[in-house]
Image (cartoon, rainbow, N blue to C red; front, side):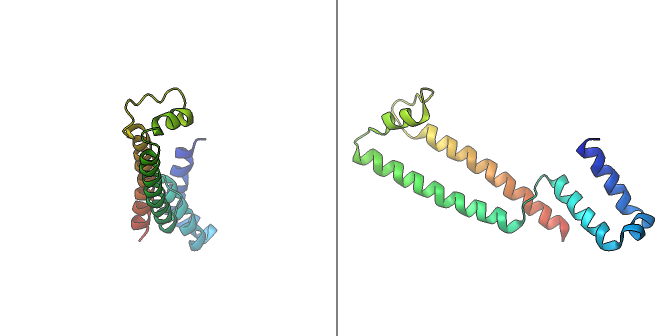
Length: 126
């Protein structure tokens, strides 16, 4: 049995009055809550999602400031350092932080999609 089948069975069971009576209303509500969270694709609560977003902003700001400062201090040597850290696939000429910032942006988009799913689940539950 795959996850979708299990969710469908549980969703149907929680609609049945005899099932609700057998397991109790509170247990049926708990099952419904878990099914809703899994169907939303997020098992984070809203507070955890907000912490992830806040931590991302702090991280992004610090990385940008560090990159700018290091590049100014070393007069452009950041490209060499970035190539050493990121490996041979790093080919930005001249270094304009595009590759590094693109990676940060991809992380941001993924993180925000998680936070949005968690928020959607929270609003659906209320």
